Image (cartoon, rainbow, N blue to C red; front, side, top):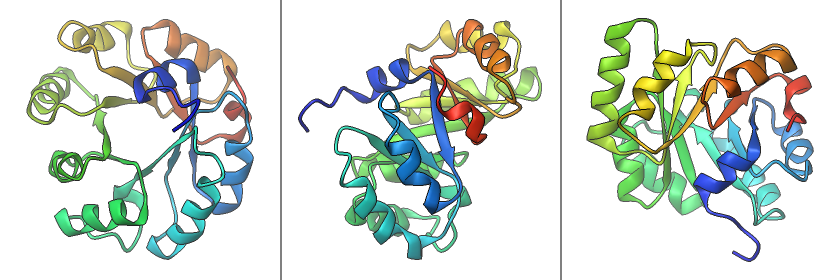
Length: 193
């Protein structure tokens, strides 16, 4: 697509990746000039035709869906094939098997990892070696820098952080800890650069 940067570059240019719960917010975030990646985190499969019609007006932007949070999508290989056929470019999931199915269908993939302790870090490192997603999303975004560094030591994947971000200061601190970008569902954070 013309004027479209690669996914990894789009993430690094974003700073904040809007996580959109409501269809009516999609046009708003797609109209923010510097937003190049948007993640859907709500709705159901019946919304996708309208969502992808809106998205088609912004060919330079990436649209992914957190499939664990979208109702009516089969959480299996057939579900991923269906989303690809509809025109969805990629998915976010905590389920590495879904990411594998999505990759088999040439979709972008973001592995979501909850880092609650050292064992979760070790498990996360094993998962990304098994699946090799296009990016990782660590939750919460407020994890200590050393946790992010553990991933940086073994991969050059883009590392996003999500959750527990309320203010611009929270976003700046998370980014200064080594995250490529943060995902945010709070409207007040969407326009930050």
